[in-house]
Image (cartoon, rainbow, N blue to C red; front, top):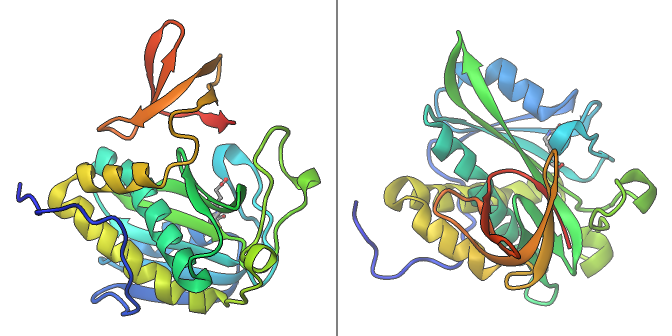
Amino acid sequence: MPKPRRWLLSIKTADWPAGVGHLSFDEVTSTLDVAREQAAQHPTATWFTATRQTASRGRRGRPWVAPVGNFYGTLSLPCNDPEMASLRSFVAALAVDDALRTVMGDGPKLALKWPNDVLLNGGKVAGILLESLVVQGQMWGVAVGIGVNLIAAPDMTQVEDGAVYPVSVKGESGVDVTPDGFLKHLAPAFALWDRQLTTYGFAPIRTAWLARAARLGETITARLPNENVTGRFDTVDENGYLVLNTAKGPRNIAAADVFF
Ligand code: BTN
C-alpha cells in the first residue's frame, strides 16, 4: 500500500467531486429510506438530500428531530466490505467537521465524539447513522445518513437523559447556511477523506480523527447493552473501536453510547 509523506489533518475545497451524484427531494420519510430504494440504480456514490423528513431516525432507533432548514442527507456508497463500510462513520465525521469549519471560520470550537457525533462548543450539532445497503440478498454498499442542525436544535426535553445537549450552527455562531450551501462543502470534503481511506487504509483517518477527538485522555463511560464501562479514553484502535483503560485493564469496544 503506498504511504504518503505526511497524513492530511484537514481538507478544504469547494469543488463538487467528479463522478458523485446528487438527487434532492422536497419531502421524504428519511433520506436513508430513499437511498435504500434507489441506491442500486446509481452505481457510483450518490447524495440523497431532502428539505423535510417525516420519519427521521437516529442511532438505536431513536427519532431525529427534523425542522425545515437543517441538513438531511444520505450518501450511498458501493462497498462490499463490511469493515470498510463501518469506517465511513469516521470519514463522515471528519467531512462534517471540515464543512462546518469552512462555513463558520475558526472561532467556534468543534470536536468529534466517538463513535460518530460532531460537537460544537460542547453541544451536539450533527449525528451520523450508517446502514447497510443490501441488494438481492448481497451487501451492495453503505448508506451514510447525516443530520446537521444548521438553524435549529431540539430542546433538552426531546433528547434522552444524559445525552449531550443539542446545538445549532446558527445558535452558536450566528452563521446562516442553507442545506444546499452546506452540501457544497460537505460533498467534496467527504470525497477527499474517502479517497484517503480507500488509498491508504484507516491510518490517516484515525490520525486525523484522534487529533479532533473530544475527551481524549479523560475518564468517560461507554454504555453497552448489558453493562457500563468507565475508563480513560486512550485511543481508537485500528478497527475504529474505542479503547478505554479501565480498572481491570484495557477494553476495546466496538459499539456503545458514550457519556462524559
Ligand atoms: C444520531 O442519532 O446521532 C444519528 C442521526 C442521523 C440523522 C440523519 S438525517 C439524514 C438521515 N436520515 C435519517 O432518517 N437519519 C439520518
